[in-house]
Image (cartoon, rainbow, N blue to C red):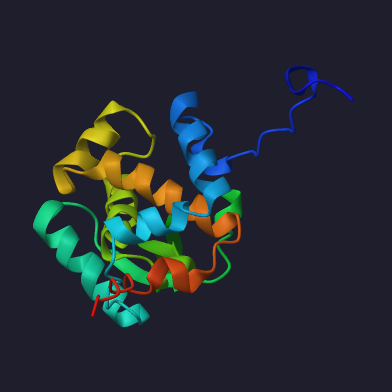
Length: 191
């Protein structure tokens, strides 16, 4: 029999969404995953899903944020949930400029597409991804100015991004979706 301290350890689970974070945070996420408690921790912190269900509601939601924070930026032609965006390939949202020919003139239209997984997320996560995509209207690169703009629109941007990554990690490692969306169970009453 091999002593416990010399046995090879099983390989650590890759945490795709947390790869850029410090090891102690990744380790804590692994511990919560092993206990089956990561989804529960996220659910407790963000218990309420949002009510933005349709593409029209999403367009109105994005326009309201844009009007509040980026009134001078280019107009948006289209905003929609996109089921083709692959969350596991880290495409949570997409901003594009589409050029079309209208009567001999070239017209540009901006589009924002949000991964359809955000239809079922807590409200702060939808806000975070919308803020991220709106910031790309002014700043193409993920640089200091980009993140300052994100913080201007959503002061808790960095915390929400981290918590969203925990949420996606829980989804990726097969935490049942209802566990992330259902309200916490009421404590049992003693008689």
